[in-house]
Image (tube, rainbow, N blue to C red; front, side, top):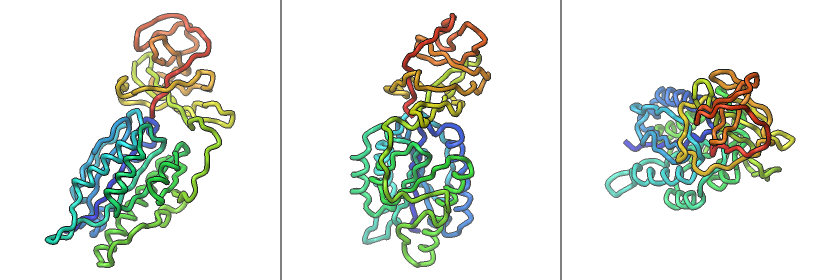
Length: 334
């Protein structure tokens, strides 16, 4: 049986922490449930998932829909889109069945790229190689949120879409849209109508997706958001503070997200810094409720209760009074 290969290239950078990665995880369940109800998708569909953060990982090789197991997704620092594209190129080169005089190979693969940020590695040569090696691939790029560099995605494909909201409902609609496009392609093939070719995803997504026809130049060169790693002083558990750029070109704290683990220096890589004077506010620690943070000389941020004049660093153990002043803070590479 000829397969309809479907590849999902999913951004798992730190900026996806919280609702976004949880919604992608549940959205994959929505997608697979819908595909398993479609006889054509079950008969010929095969799905693979590749994630990219600091590195790229093939978390699910190309597997038939009926036996596909949804992997658990985890966030990590970095947005190595180039590494993800290279792994996608390698996967399609080794997993796809080609046409031969003796047999017909797989149908044109469908690729869906989901990202919420900007690449932190060299991606252009990987994109060019992917295009050369797999010219028949139908590729859709979906930028989630307001920190996406759409000039990158438009270079990958003209089938570029924007999803401005990143809540659970919108992600659910996105994966319903993806499953609908897969079902449409498999249904057309199963009915003997041939391959559909490129489809307009807004047909199934409604207002959730908007096709990007033209890339507008950004008004500011500054990042749209900054992520700061913090340790809970009481429980020594890690979390991220999310800051978004406001109209005054300052970063305003909008959320605190729990992390499953503290990332190593190797994972974090070379980090940029941001002046503390540009960071406004602090969300409460999601573990103990402390409403402020202190930057220790060891390079670790720890949560702090301003009613206590002393601070004990949850990393190096320093115990002393808190001083005030301006300084630079390392930001996450997510």
